Image 1 (tube, rainbow, N blue to C red):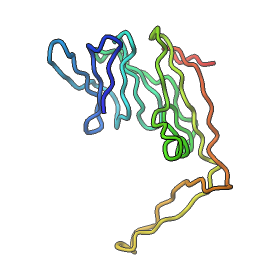
Image 2 (cartoon, rainbow, N blue to C red):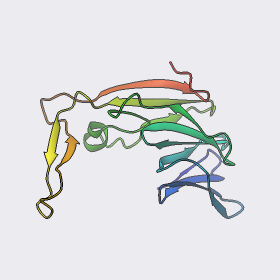
Image 3 (tube, one colour):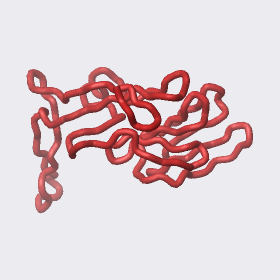
Image 4 (cartoon, rainbow, N blue to C red):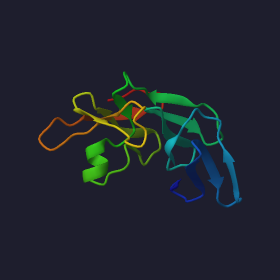
Length: 159
């Protein structure tokens, strides 16, 4: 998948865990030097910044690859910023967890904490020597993730 700025002149996409930008008029593409692996990179409407998620943190970088920084970092292993939690993705078909403001100066960011969600253990019968994988799964009638929305500016201040 890919996303473009409002003028459809700059596209951003993830490939092999890296952020790439393509200048569509020039026909060029390049990787940006950012920490990975990267999920869901999207340019701001004005094309000056790229927001993306890496290791549960929402990050932003200049479209030229400058000024990479975290806007919101997870407080622990159960928290993510900028990602859709299981119920949103699986049941509501909402696959994104952050959205740019029309003025490119803020983002609406989902914070998901799955610590209340019950854990299931799934073993691989083909490899009984391996430990079962722990999976957070909100079965019907059980606790869901705690999801909140924040308006975050490009310096990381949030409301």
